[in-house]
Image 1: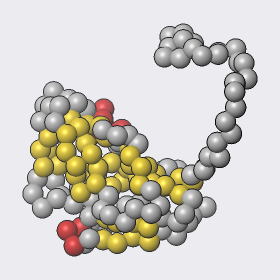
Image 2 (image 1 turned 90 degrees about the vertical axis):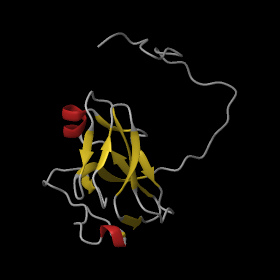
Image 3 (image 1 turned 90 degrees about the horizontal axis):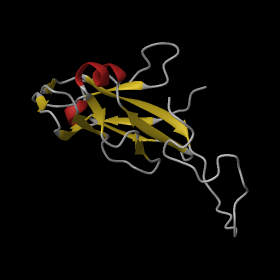
Length: 149
């Protein structure tokens, strides 16, 4: 299944390819760095890297910005607010907030794949306020209460 999503390439990203699924089974599309000069993140440094893209999602959908597993494993690069959410009514540039959790500086060049974008349906909640909740075996246990591993 596919849905139409309008996209605008901003001037600083005009020459970069649109995000695309790399394989038939890919859930996400790679976002690329639309930077004019290399951007280096020192260990524990974070920064917002532009993609040169603005999108118009249909109502009822969101786009999730997620880390690329290869960057995370090899270099310690993570998305600070993972997954970052692009709402259906947002029309600004998609920027990726990255942090370098590794031990060495990491440099991003123009066109480098920096994150992935997953488009997903959104379910809206209608709150039903009640005096108490049903009892479950887990109850109020959290933060590791179901055991290790």
